[in-house]
Image (tube, rainbow, N blue to C red; front, side):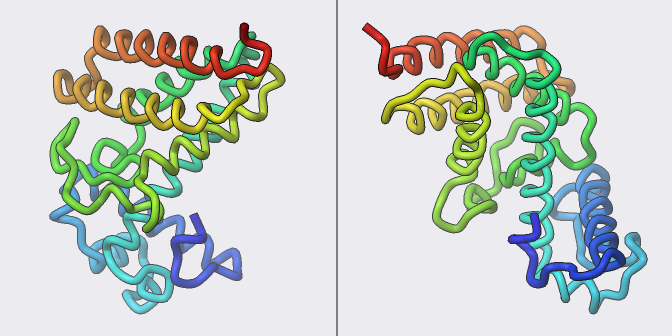
Amino acid sequence: MTSTLRRRPSQRRSAERVERMLDECATLLEEVGYDGLTTKEVARRAEVPIGTFYQFFPDKQGLVRALAMRNLDRFLVRVTDRIAAAEPAHWSQLSDLAIDEFVAMKRTTPGFAVVDFGEVLPSPGGPALQGTNHMLDSALENSAVVAQRLRALVAGLHDKPAGEGLDLALRVAVEAADAVLKLAFRTHPQGDAALIAECKQLVRRYLAEHLSAARPDAP
């Protein structure tokens, strides 16, 4: 998250202020949406001077970008914890865990329904505001960044897939899951259960077919 800041907090007090501003940003996104979000109100609720806000964030978009990165970091921690607890027998089971955690964050994490990993959704399930698909990285789309971070998790397993197709397959899986889950949350505020189940099946079968074929010991 700190790489998205204008200045890295060097003291505990500064780090706590940054976290409070991100927390209030998330709460306001939940309450008033992206259009209603203002830097002045974030600073007021976080009880910091507006000058302090601008020490760390260049503007509203910079604040939301930092929140999106924090969301991604927390999502990956949650998935990692689920992996440790479930001890999946095969890498393909990771997709269900990741989808479950994403859905749980959509349902319970303040502001996540508006800004998850960068895209700004004025209404549940999109469409996203134009230009917000590069919130995490100016050179890469948000989905590509997410796929790269998930690849690191996959590569950490003993039974890991290999081959040149891994990056492309994970990118396609992320894009497909994102599209179906947007539909699920357009259909029902808590995410349509049938569509979430279909999303899991779609991604699991795709990864099983494409990534298993990429293993060096595959026939």
